[in-house]
Image 1 (cartoon, rainbow, N blue to C red):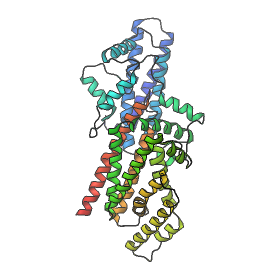
Image 2 (cartoon, rainbow, N blue to C red; image 1 turned 45 degrees about the horizontal axis):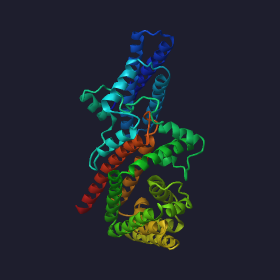
Image 3 (cartoon, one colour; image 1 turned 90 degrees about the vertical axis):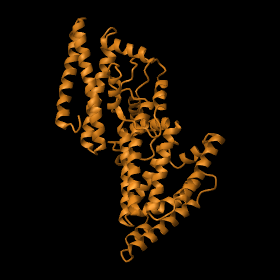
Length: 429
């Protein structure tokens, strides 16, 4: 199914939609004929299998950066899932083959209302170096094991006690204005409007909470960022040890605050600075990275004058720019009292921001500038992909969102490691 033309996808979409409408219409006018029921269930399976195809194509479109195709596929999946959901909730008979098959699956796999245990067992099987290979391979493994084939994005349990769909819940909260937002980040996340952004951010926050509650996933993300930031500093001619030491002090501070008052003081401090929640997205991605990207678009006058000083040779401009940014960052550091989140935060920034700013502003040798630019692009791609997951599968839960985001992070880690390794090897050569 690789590189399936959009025309073929569209053709399958129209065919499946036509089957679905005929399927529902036939059901409404049908008797209790078992043959009719079987045809309806077969049509349902056909549409569910189409969803599996579209999920795989959506992932490929996202990875290829084809936003137009990805957007159309999301709309196709949304409508298909709504049709399936309507059929399951309104028309599925208690003795239909689909319902009986699900009951058999629940008994075979031991599924009950304790859905979180199944999620934990799947998560515990994923090691730091393992690759989450996605829905297509998961379906393939299920088929090879001899189990009845089903859509891998659909939970085994279809009882009335199933956990509410996270995406639907997020849409309702966003529409009601109940999702706290610090800044709209439509361009960085690929979202369409304020409501879409808020709903997807709610899902991202829920997924992040699950990820950072599990040490092996948390360490994977931390180690990737440490490796990348260290590589960027080395490429810029600086020793990363000072940054590592500052981050180590920052982590010890946070652990102590966690033990002291469960981060209550830190949460209060950050809320005063506009952070709506204390999590990875709100603090690291939004407050640190996205704000830094915004600042690069419109830097302070002192920075702009240094960058635009064509009389200075490039190496002197780079040195002057780093010195200017270091001075501005150091001045900010002095504004905060000891023992606060922002104090430790800016102690890290003093070592990181000068070089990172020079690279993103294009002041430095070509290899260093390209490394900074490409890493920034990977970060935006990562967040855009994480924000694209809600709405692409039915019955989304925080655990499933965490699984999808972990897959995105692992892809990001692989790309980052390749980028840093290649850049540093060119430096050595």
